[in-house]
Image (cartoon, rainbow, N blue to C red; front, side, top):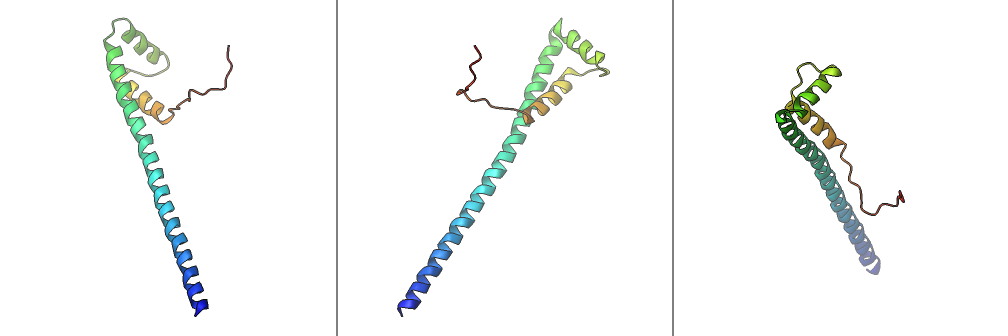
Length: 108
């Protein structure tokens, strides 16, 4: 009788561990999905900011033609500053890096 109670208690401990493991796996998958969505969200927001910046630069009298001429010099024919800004912002959104304020660099 005592042996059956001990075995039942052992099975309960195993089931408890399995349930905790499944819960941890679900949380891990959810965090990974949130991270993937955040990466694409940063890229989309970067594209939006790049497009707005390209639009504004296109209207600046000196800067717009200067930037367009710079892109023409590297081989971009008829540069659309809004599209180029959106493209560069989208790519930049993927490579966004956050730096902490607790830097150990003594660059003085």
